[in-house]
Image 1 (cartoon, rainbow, N blue to C red):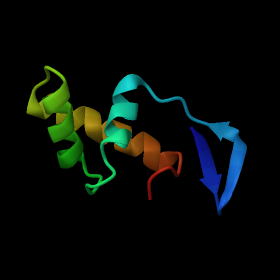
Image 2 (image 1 turned 45 degrees about the vertical axis):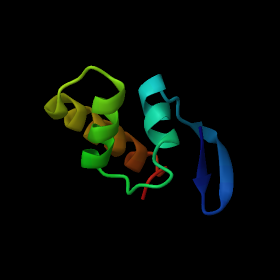
Image 3 (image 1 turned 135 degrees about the vertical axis):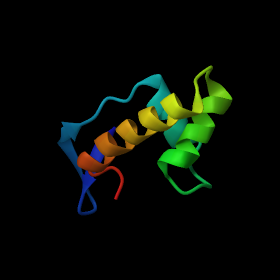
Length: 71
């Protein structure tokens, strides 16, 4: 994934997404991106507890915020 910097693609800053992150992003088109919403998606797709799913979702969100993919 290439980061958009002020409406311009920045090919010097790329982020690699694992299968889980890709799944979450692809399934977030019609929902608000929150740790709770993503935890729900994770528990639907994977055999993971709600607590672990929420913790993992929060970590992914933090990485995406830091990379300025989410705002």
